[in-house]
Length: 174
Image (cartoon, rainbow, N blue to C red; front, side, top):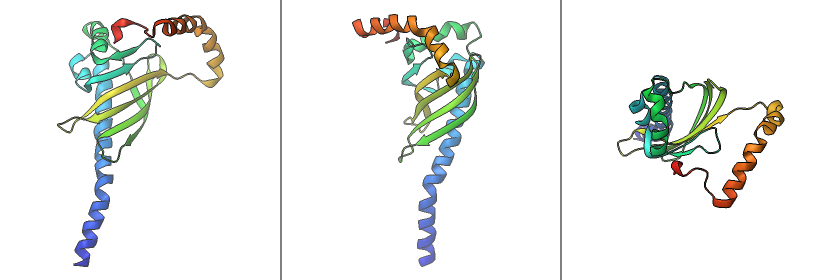
């Protein structure tokens, strides 16, 4: 009897780890297929991996897109057969205790050089992982930050004044 209890205890301890390892592979697949769908300009495959309430934050300070606004913005690129090509070269994934929410960061090889993506995935009612929030950032080596600050100083000043005056960057992204 004690052997059965010990076996059951070991299985109970191993299940969460196995569940996260399985989820890790599922998330890797979702993200890799999402990036591949953009590379292949496959609009339906790309957006099928996002929730109905997803948010996509791009590299420009004005790019804070609802999924519907991001679809509208992206459609012409996909329709022309050329969206964007991002390939993950490093990725870290973390889970909540219930294993139904995950957050990640990734380094990407892109046409803009190395970028960083980070985001949140959630399991839907069918048990599929979907991207709920994604942030894309251009990675800037520390030794080049001063030069970058000089380049963007004027544009940042104008945008900051606009945001402080009315709190909105661009109405079409709501």
